[in-house]
Amino acid sequence: MEQRLEDYLSFVVSWLPNWLLAMIVLVAAVLVGSLIHRFVFRILTRIVAQRDLFWRSLVSRTEQPMRLAIVAWVMVPAIGIAPLSDQQTGLLRHGLLLCFILLIGWMARTTLHIWTTVYLRRFKLDAEDNLLARKHVTQSRILERVAATLIIGFTLSFALMTFPAVRQYGVSLMASAGVAGIVLGLALQPVLKNLFAGIQLAITQPIRIDDALLVEGEWGKVEEITSTYVVVKLWDWRRMILPLGYFIENPFQNWTREGAALIGTVMIYLDYTVPVSVLRQKVEEIAGKSKLWDRQVVNVAVTDFKQNVMEIRILVSAPDAGKAFDLRCEVREKLVDFIQREYPHALPQVRASGTIVEEARAAGLAATADGRTMQQ
Image (tube, rainbow, N blue to C red):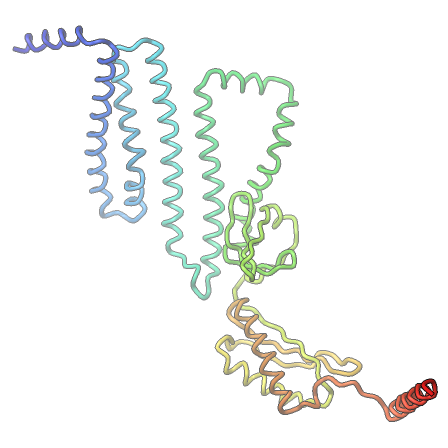
């Protein structure tokens, strides 16, 4: 029976054309690889069912590249069995090698993204005190983009090195004079500069995601940090795009470097007759009734004497920059309303002595008389 089956298969194989037989072998390899993947994927899913989120997400997100990898692995012996020419065998094996390299890069990039996402789940940017969250989010996002760039670069490099023509060209280029290398280095200078600037920003962290900045005369918050530039969302919803190297080479103000709380300053200029003690009580009352005040700092002090007015500085603290700005506006509005109602004479005035007033009045009368004489 077995001999008859073997003879029958030999007859069928000899009767089929080579291209159809090769197609059948390759399709069978794809089907076998798909079945093996389904079996392996179910086993891995059960194994990681009780593990943490990283491993569950890793198995789930790498289902497609895993299937392609197993199919490519099964097709390697199938290519040797299929009746193909040497050229066809070489092309298919080279294609499988390229597929294997790209799959490794794909899985490495996916693993990096999953790890970063799972790691950042423990930090909340919408918390009131989000300093620690901003540190980790900024550092992780920048390093993720740098690592992703390196993964893509290495993957493409290994893929290109599988082509003999490209490999020989690269060797000849490296062995040639250094002019090409200098030109390439100059061309890549902005890219390399931003790449190293990103690494430096991730380590030193002069800025972080959601930091409040005063840069180029504009106030805004850091919305996004990419591998080449930083997006600052300005107070009026405009976006300012700045290269990473800008924050290494230029000065700027970071209002949330060590904490989100800020002290707001209100400067007011009033007449010398205003009772400062009453003004101080009113400011404390305004701050105490405001929901924006964090109950930390409230202060009223006369900081300077001008020729006609005295300078009064008011300090009030708030949990963050936005609330500090709103609190300053609230103090200004309510304080001016109080002064207008209770001490209108304390608003800035221009004084003149009696002699100066009489001389000005006499000059005005003389000018009026001269005008009448000219009309006559």
